[in-house]
Length: 341
Image (cartoon, rainbow, N blue to C red; front, side, top):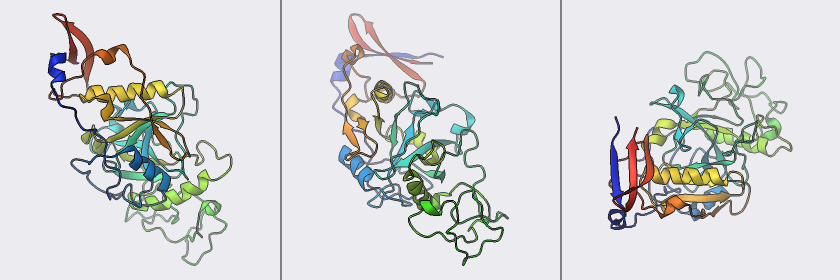
């Protein structure tokens, strides 16, 4: 079924300027939070840079002790470049979406191993107030279809390591056992003691309440010279795709790019978000990111395109993920035609 609507520029011009829908990045939110806030507050570029500059291993995704920024890099799992994909693993209440946590000391970002795609190096910063962590690892654990499968749960009958990752350790670890020979020991900022796992299982994945421990390992791995792509160059954090969807458009704190090649894709993503929700382009941050830089992010204004001369979609239009906006002319007056496919 197809529905069409036409909005005249005169109608759109009469609408008041909407405030920037940039989620507040400094509110206190825990990694294991079960539900997102109903309406995130606003944020600024300064707040995003503050979290990036001061982020450190923590269980908190926001607040003054924030771990860093939650980012999703384009990895071919998206619809319209900013939505989790249509496959079952990215849908519904159990759906997940891959992200990473970054800060100035831990700047590693996902890049496809084959490279060469127009969107490589671009992504979105997820509003920390809408990001609910499901599990994580200090390296890429290829979660494409498996998600958090194998995550330790209370009552599991296997024994693992307190570090939370798959690594050689004794069959019956003891609290007094020295772990200096453990493969991950050189990457940690403090001595590692192998103890019986709280979940009594073997898993390379960390549960939400162990996010800080994972980030300590990630910090060490990223500090190694010539760290390999899948050996800890970046961490992988699975967040709830449903929580992200439910909070759009506030779930997107900003769109960013890291290279000249990825600039156009970031601009397209930025425009797709604005069009999908009837926003002005200025209402969503579009940023140039310098990994490890200080500041890490800078405002970017995209060059004008012919479609920019078309009036925006009125704010009181209904919004649907599958709607497509296209400039049209009716009776000599230019407007927007939305088709619900």
